Image (cartoon, rainbow over all chains, first blue to last red; front, side):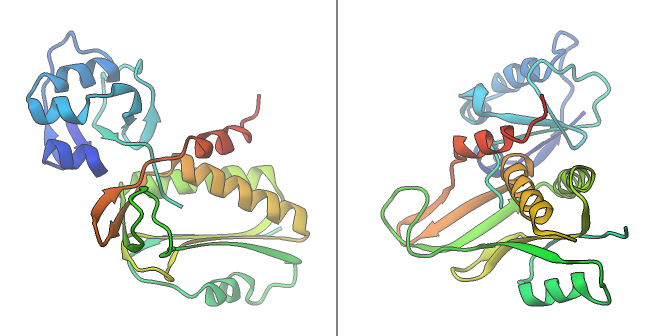
Length: 83
Length: 159
C-alpha cells in the first residue's frame, strides 16, 4: 500500500511517500504506526508521540483503530493548521 | 433557490472584492454576504520565539484538501439556506499582509450567512489538511495546532 507523509512527519522521515508491505499482523492504523516506528530512527522520531499523529485512508480522516485492509493510500500528518 | 459554490486551492493571491462581485453577479436573491478573510500577520509570531513572522509557507494534501472543503461546503448548504458559497485557500509562500484564505457565504438574510461562515471556518481549521510553516529572522518552524480549534469545531457537532 502507498503511504504518504505531510509537514513535520514528512520532514522527520525524509520522504513524502513510499510503498510498504506490512506483515499480516498489522491490522489497524495504530498497528501501522507501531510497525513503521520500527523501521529506523527517522520513523521512530516522526512517530515518537503517536497520539498527536493524524491519519487518513483514501482522503478520509480515520482513527487509530480503523482497519487498514483494502486501503489504497494511507496518510500520516500532524494536527492541521490551515485557515 | 439556486446556489453557486466555488472552491479553489491556489498559489496566487486573490482579490476579496472580486470574489464577492463574482458571487453576487446577476443575482437578485442574495440579501447578505458574510466574508471571513484570513490574512498573514507579521507582527507576532505563532511559534513563540519572539521574532516577527517574515513569511508563512502553506503545505496541503492535494486531493484530500479539496475533498474536505467540499464535504464541509455540502454540509453548510444542507444546514443553512445559503444561496452561494466561495472558499479560496492559498498554498505556498505567503508574505505578511497577503491573503491566506477567504470564506464567503451568501444568503437571503444575515443569520444563515454568519452562522455558516463561522461553522466553515471552525471545521476547516480543525479538519482540512493544510499546515503552516512560519519563517522568522531566527529560522523556521511548523506552527502547532491549537486545541481551541478542535473545541471550536466540536461545538457544531450534532448529538
